[in-house]
Image 1 (spheres, one colour):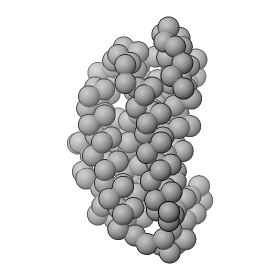
Image 2 (spheres, one colour):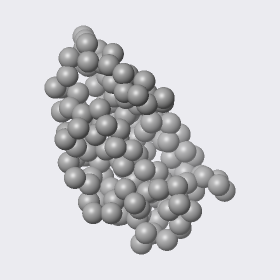
Image 3 (cartoon, rainbow, N blue to C red):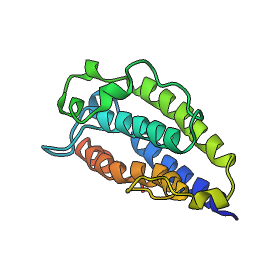
Length: 160
């Protein structure tokens, strides 16, 4: 196994966990906040998609598909305060956009060498190309801990 294959395992495991948590949640449940001051799941998922798109575009210019018009603008720090479902994309739209962005992320990872993983990004939170790819799994997992709380609040049993 090489470094790129290890990164794919990590990214794919995060997807498995996150899609498990999101799978049976309704549109209404996606708008629940785990506690006061936390962001609802729908905003978090949009934020994760927009972040992945931006991060991978930064290290692999031209590799990402276009996001739907106005997508990134719906998932900013300012919009996180909204509890209006109409301000955000539907679950189906979010998951479809995620799938196209994630496919492009993995395709971009396939095009580099293991040596490329050590190249600097100039970004303090992911200083190398390898760290930026690793973040595509761990960033999703970080947020999914809140989704597990919402699932329990909705009466769902633990998945993992």
